[in-house]
Image (cartoon, rainbow over all chains, first blue to last red; front, side, top):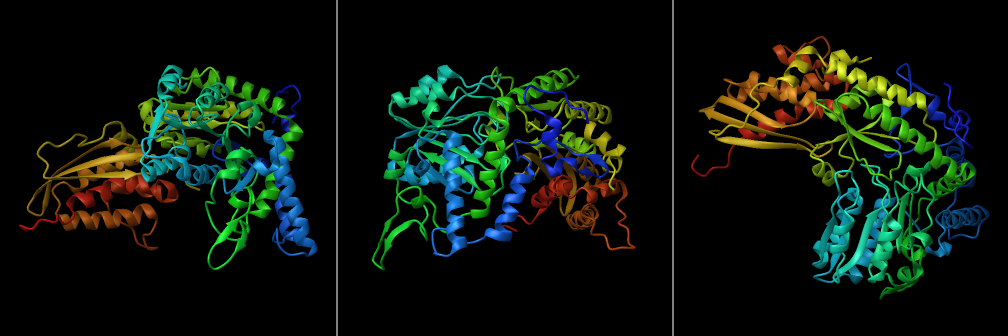
Length: 412
Length: 147
């Protein structure tokens, strides 16, 4: 496979780091365009997890034996790496969770339930993944608060006039996605967070789709909370990150109780550890955290600017070539976009498109992308979504285009 | 290996393009809604019974070619049948699409046999069976104190 060179990025070489990409599936080379669902893993991540279980496995934060101490040091070193990755002021503001979903639920149930009162408003957007909507709906039903949503335009951008109207004296929280998983829109998070904070509103940014693709600086964004998942950032499943501003984390009550999150326990009651341990009850996903560390090291070694430039080129190429096909409607045409291309094929249900593409070895997502309100907004039951990572190539886009021509022929 | 042409047989593609009985029924005496939360597919099935016989049946909804063609062919297959016959047909159809037909046996399902290719695509079984589950809910025993 020949690959056009992007400045500073040897894609052909990088692809060799990902064992799965050299596989043939049912006789055809894998064309993996479902990176927004989950990314593939480089050898260094797979090896780090394997090595941990083969030679380093022990529980952490307990036991004085050699392996336990070494595992603890390795686990805490990843916390420091994540803090640098997000430019968080201190590692103590990094809480390991099972993923973005758990991070958001943690904030909703700990910060939310101890803070939100009847009549308060929680402001989200109409392009949120269900994981940044349903936890707030649950919180609202538990507290008597109301969830309000910033509408989106036909291009798939946030309606900023509506945002200003919806941000009121009753607003207590702004929870919004950095990058839309269904549309690819990159939101002006920094500006919106600033407007919210000027009114004393707490802010949470869902970074599940941004952290793997854009440089993230939580201090520049100015948000109080930022969440992302390891598995979309070339790391293992089952691990994610919550960044929380220290002043807020300190005031938040525990969410789950158990080992590791306590200070002292008697039969009468307990006192709790300081953050982040307060929010990491029980034995955490140690191997996955180690794997996440390897993933971030890998991403850092390539560099976000090279990744961003290549993915931008892929998006421009795919947008032009797919958009020019007859009978294709692109869903999500924002000016600022990440490498996500959502579309529908006239007269053909997205699942059928997905099945035909799959027959050519092309993996895309067909469905509502856990963003049903977005589907309603655009009047479609589902879309086809091709989402790219730095290891994708122009040849793979050409394969997608050939597959879509086949779809049109089959269902003509 | 399952081939695409076994899944998307011409009869399926044709029923997807021009589904039969694709309309709401104003004089239906029962209806049910089916929903597949995984993919967002949605179907409504209307039925008018005469005694124990399905006198008329229709559907509307949104879904993939498999689910739409399955609903279309289902309405043609069960019209004029008794409730028990329709339920038995569903059982045999389900065996066909899940590949649960015992070796050496074949299901004789007439036109519905075009869905045999679905068994090679396990993820699409729900697409093929959504309308049938919905029909079953519609014609199932109605809780009615007068009966």
